Image 1 (cartoon, one colour):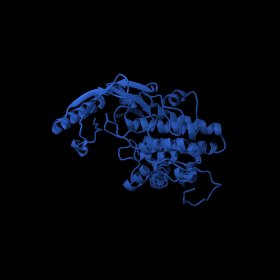
Image 2 (tube, rainbow, N blue to C red):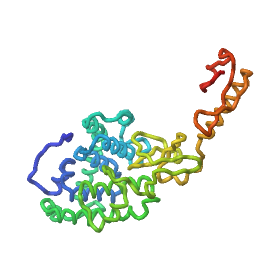
Image 3 (cartoon, rainbow, N blue to C red):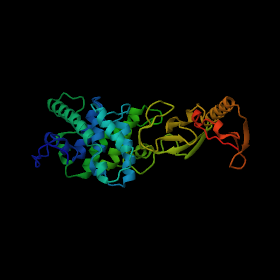
Image 4 (cartoon, rainbow, N blue to C red):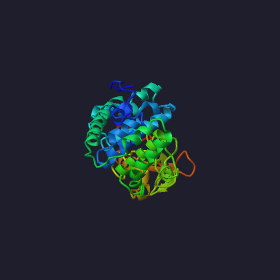
Length: 350
């Protein structure tokens, strides 16, 4: 465990002691839920807390392929410069180290477990400050959010049913404010909703009829289930000459429509198989820029025509190796006439 706090007062389950250290807080679901609500309702930044919870090594139990997929989903949501829920004080060095690691396949499980260590240290410090604020405001009765009573929280320690009740009573109202229009909300709101859905399902195991619809619709981190938000996962979409195919991105890639980084829970977007156009899934039907494959062909033809003209050689249309196609070739009886250095096209002589 990376925590450097002292392990003391284990017999004291008072709210003040449970929330004395970050490691102890995350071991008590009801208290953690109350703290999450405090952070949300007092308009503090939840990024560090959510990142810290989602990158707990306890979740690292899948194969390396899944781990790499999950790693980019989290990295693109919390750490990249334009991440919608960026953790404060993350340095460029930390981001670049993770970017480099994601460019390669993880050869060992331990590599993934170490991936977020530095970022978790930064996030933990931010969570500690928020936790100190919560304890101080709760003790002084100054917080806008009071939460359940001390006695209610104590009964949750050895009572799972009571724990789930406290979680649902206090966290579901927060979720309800986010879940009405996930398709049209901001990236930040969608990221927060996905964090809460993941925490409810994967950490609290608090699935119920009260949150079933939200958990079914909202994309989750650390999940094998593909997100169905923004429509069904259509594998191929022909549009504006593009041959878009659904893709799970695993390293930073520019969305050519929004000009931001393709982020979030996969499959995040579409990649054209004919050109280099990549687009977030929510924007694919709004693409108006035509595929550049035909333009590149025209450019190559123009370059070939110019080269033939410069050399004073004929440009002839011939049958291509594939049936039904044809190609342009420069023909010369003297191969020395062809200055291959003038272009990078394949030239032929008879």
